[in-house]
Image (cartoon, rainbow, N blue to C red; front, side, top):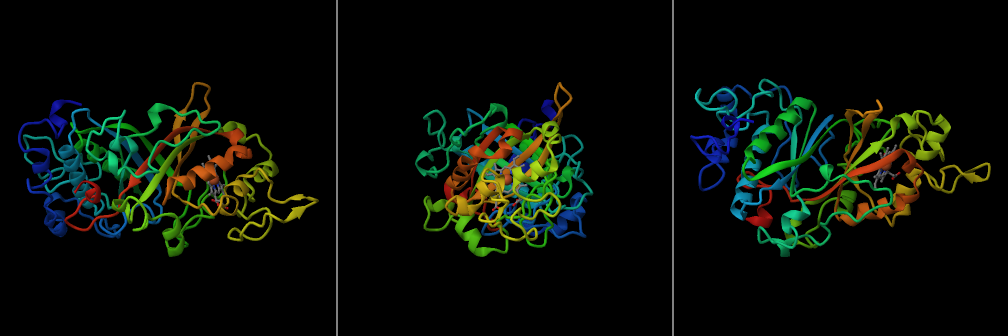
Length: 422
Ligand SMILES: C=CC1=C(C)c2cc3[nH]c(cc4nc(cc5[nH]c(cc1n2)c(C)c5CCC(=O)O)C(CCC(=O)O)=C4C)c(C)c3C=C
Ligand SMILES: [Fe+2]
């Protein structure tokens, strides 16, 4: 990248000025005047209903799962101060509140700025609708403390459960797809819109934080509302049948949202994100007989019904036997992952398929980018430990891992992270 396209280093207005942010903080009134921006930037769109960025909880968790994902993990620069971190979170919140409404990243955006300066907005989403874009911002364990150093004065505010996950049997984690100080999950029904969001938010971070790794995903592998049909994963099975859904308030309270009585208080209304990049050995799986594939999962491949009988949404019955053997194998994925066999542990799964091309042997470098939102990371740990005997393990390999605290949502005028750093 040349100097001229870096908003943090070019001459002229500072990044915060360029984004329309006053020295005293966010010019949130500008977002309220969004309709005016349509004519200014030309990037306002109608015909679809954008998801609000503001609310009690961050968008992108219970929001109906969009078709595409771009998730980026960031590390703060070694020179970044607490003031820089606060400024970044304010700038991201402001920009996210615009992008999710189908607007350019700033008022002058892609084409309304001066001709003698790089545009604030990179422009590839110009003319595209909001495409259900949601932007969800997370804070990683290393933000609170890195190698024993309390860089931002928040070490004593780290949620006790926010730490790198313990090692699991079969993990072959790669540093280049694991961990991070911050993350942004951008989900949209158009991949160009999701990529545009991450690209422009990364640009805003220039000088303060840089991308550590990012992952694109397509073809959601879950549903978060009863209205959504259950999609299929790359092994061809319906995935997301038994998920925590947006209209199940009791399960959300129990398993997804941090309660006001939980510690720390600044996380109330937030959640925790567990991200696992899981390679799926496609060519090996494709040689497995249909009956064996179903035994491994514990469900039928056609309609997704449990092998104990019924329809897709019938609860699995682990006591049913066929010819003296359990209909749902004792080592099947569904039996081992089911809340009844994990002390009630549940999670809101929101993962995506990914294909990163092919490897040197011509095999697909592909799998599941597993994303789960939980009230306590321990919920994931419990289930993942129980999956140590999963028949599916022969066909999958966990290569990336990250955990992030997802702070509560914010109201107009506020910013994500304010309950921690404000
Ligand atoms: C630790 C959590 C989980 C990991 C990791 C995981 C990986 C993984 N899963 C599939 C495919 C399916 N999973 C299904 C159900 C299911 N999976 C988990 C958890 C993890 N999966 C849970 C909690 C459940 C629901 C269990 C239940 O309550 O019945 C299914 C069945 C359809 C469904 O209910 O979603 C499939 C298929 C793959 C391929 C995979 C790793 C690559
Ligand atoms: Fe699963």
